[in-house]
Image (cartoon, rainbow, N blue to C red):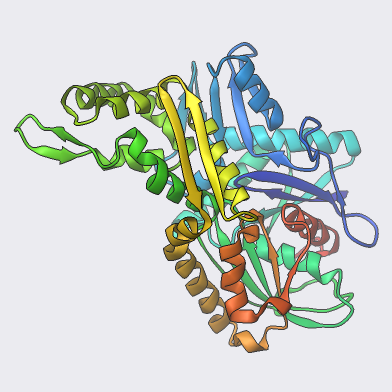
Length: 421
């Protein structure tokens, strides 16, 4: 039986093959991507194909079909949600497990090109999907069901920050007490762990504490939308009620607007009727027209691509400009790093509080921690690194590949964990 580790992420998915000594081999998942080892966790229902495509091809076909199909991203964020059970996509109902299985089938097909053997898969999971225990169980059951639908018979789980710690451990020549900070698109997770050179097998006694909070890169994108771009789509405007009162623009529309993968849910008949009423009685009909164009044109993905691009630029520059033109939408907004850091400051306070709780649960202080291994795309944001530096000092921060460290560690887990554990 061959052993693989899969990091099914909110934004990206990667796979490693745990065989032999040394670090596992990272496997190609998306030949069309700039880095074939990283598959965008993105799927598109093609009207022409009457089926799904995944990753970079999803974006290509979405554009080729003039955005007539359905583009879906960040499906991992719905795992613990009781509100998302199923959805109609064109003429068929799909459960959340069905949609996740589309991505996992792509992974299973990639494995079949590497080996015909049976597969033991270790699947990563956040330290915390959601805070309620019953919804945690729901998330796990759904992921197990999706994996089974994709053809994986032997499934196990490992916390993603623990997996990242195992990747870092492979580079050590002496034991360390480490804090692993996995700062991704959907969550920020922390683990305090004793690491040692050459340690293998059951590691449960080495894990002192783990925990997480549902704040990540998607949260920061939503802050940019809410603070900088939402006024283009109605935020701050009013409309006249049937009783003659001036009321603020409906908050539930703006909440959806903060997460691009939820914007398609605004295409319902009820929302269309509401937008028509808002245009008639609102203080800024042009803003309603822009919102309708964003929704009807399936443009939210591309707007958030520009938000993500600006956020990335702010990691190395003091300012960036968000430019977006489509239909009646014409946006050009400058954002400074200082303004961005002010937007996300409350979120980082919650992340820091979670980190402090994990240290306390482990019964260690920041001074006891010898190294902080950071992974995940959000770990590259200067304000995030500054938060860690204030507590531990820059000299203790460590990093390797931000996008594949977790997958590599999951491959180590798959290789080294006893089969009956």
